[in-house]
Length: 489
Image 1 (cartoon, helix red, strand yellow):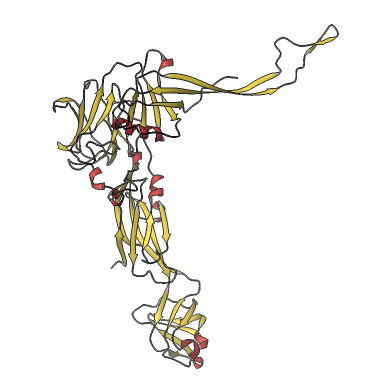
Image 2 (cartoon, helix red, strand yellow):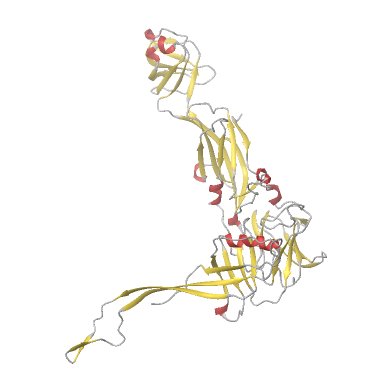
């Protein structure tokens, strides 16, 4: 029977950037040198040393004696984003965003054994008898004996370091003369002199836990902070499940008012969904009267996460909702979008990684200003000149100051159109996202006017506008391309 008890564990599916804490208890926690051992393995594969992802040895927590370990930092190193399908307009495999693992729960402590039987004379040396515990000591082992009660004063020669000179299944004899024993009924404890340990790595097992590349906002510093991550709602296996995006299908207070995200022509929205092998998933676009506008399907060959394209297709040019089903049954509740068909100056967008690992887009339909910052590295060189008519003169086009390295950093000042309050709140995720792409399909026939490239948002602060304070809301942002232009020398 395992000596380990699981006190707390995370949900089946957890965001990697939130605490992922395991808490366990063990009946051996009061043994000397005790440590809890948490060993992480991939969910697919044998639990052998070669497959260990990480192992943690943890001291018992003061007060409770529990073993506590947060593995979120490890899980963050095992998941990442996948941008390979952006622009394709279909669902694609985002396996890098998902990881499945097992946890072996074990422990270790310095091996020691108590004895309670009367000491015996074995050919002039002291024999110790063990009860209820098989003897593991063999001839030649160095052991340390610590006596209790009157033992140290009655048997001073038996206290401390000794050598095992004979052993049986339940007894062992040490190199202490029987004639030195004054108190044969004294009890004691025996341990290896080298402090070797009893190690159990797989006393209990937790299997098939999952993480994804997300950071769930659990409303810090509010009453909702004590609520756990709703893991069951993101498993993609029932009609009430959610997609892995920071956008919500409904108002998070009433769960009755649909929340609509502003979308636009060619918008690149990809929401992550937990999928299962052997199923066929259908993505359906409906108008606000629940009439079907468009659909497509995909069949994942493996369990994991797929990035599902939910932006407007060529047949979707109005407000719409997206619902996904699996083998004919709903896999999630619908997500709503408001189609922006206003006249535009530019059709540019920034595609960004949201908090839960999905890709969202923001349109910048007003004027865009492209700028460049130039840096030059120069040095002054000696002017050799030449001799002409017995006099020193210069040479044509001579240079005293030479430029040897020129760098150009391009920036773009982008401006949104007027937006609603929900999109104004969503804008802060764009400003803080670590992965952003600039997508400009303007004048696509001219290569110099078309951009689809990584960029960095130059923003160090933001303000979230509310329509109670500002009726008309629009935003602007400055970005710089993530790569500098190559310049010849």
